[in-house]
Image (cartoon, rainbow, N blue to C red; front, side):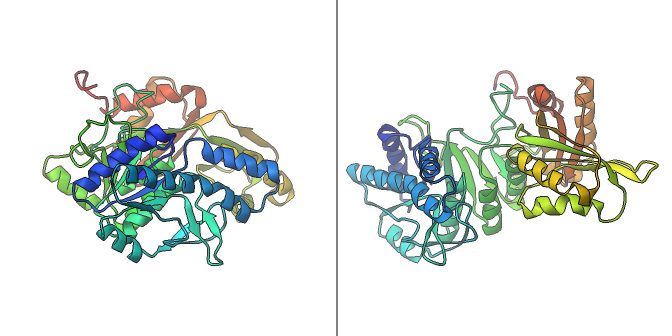
Length: 421
């Protein structure tokens, strides 16, 4: 079971979490719990680091920010004990959670689950701080923002758990953001592939890396809300959204438990920025000169369009980068202007990416055409398009984001019926 920062914000909420956990243990389950720091706590600790030293050492930064989860894991263990449950905390270095790569964005390499499994078999509830691990040289590391989801999936894989329940401030995965579309429906099940695409194109429910790990390790993940009343039925009887393999999804469809749609959901992301380089020489190697320096600086490039070459052997190249990386990307490209040989560099951060996702696209033609026609009917201009096997994304003006999401949600028949809305 994993609980996020809003679920752990203060002693009252921690008590509520303890009751949810105790119910699972009372039902005969062996339980491990992964917790995030209290909401806002990590930001507070990050600010302390910046005040102490603007050019902070990432290794010491990790020591400071990892303390948020240490506090909540100890408090939850104490609260469970006050309710008569056997519980203990296991810090990242005590398991240990072995990590590789850089501080502040480490990746989990391995978790030794033997001691943890033995403790759970003995009836002890294990409380584990998310987001933290141990490097090869014995230093504390952190996994980057949202890393507790990944910690939970990794622990579930290490102890071979039947299921990993991610409790959050939403009660499942919806066909789109319910704050934009009131008729958005909660999905009973989503495949790993679909969730991976939805997470990568703007759905904030789960961290992308955690979904990728769940897919690789075959961990069944369930997303549900921790803001249920004390008298609510347990998670086993009131499921949120299950994230499962395509094989399991096909079984659910055959049993009539899940309805298969061509499109599963519509995601939007306003954190993109557009870069246009005009009059780039239309010759081999020119595009490599643009994207190599960006790759070296770990700047993710998403949509790329190269226009048809002009008469003079020149072309315009358009692409998108995360908004947070726009200034760095601009500086790098200006620095490499002579190597690339472009005329003008134009940027625009007032754009949004709208994505239509669904495994059904593999076997169903016309999904993209429906998208383009629906947007055209409402006068929404498409500036760029990118596709994968189960996704079509378009770039549009940021001002038209909400309208586009509503139009597409209706166009694909995803609106809930009035009585169910």
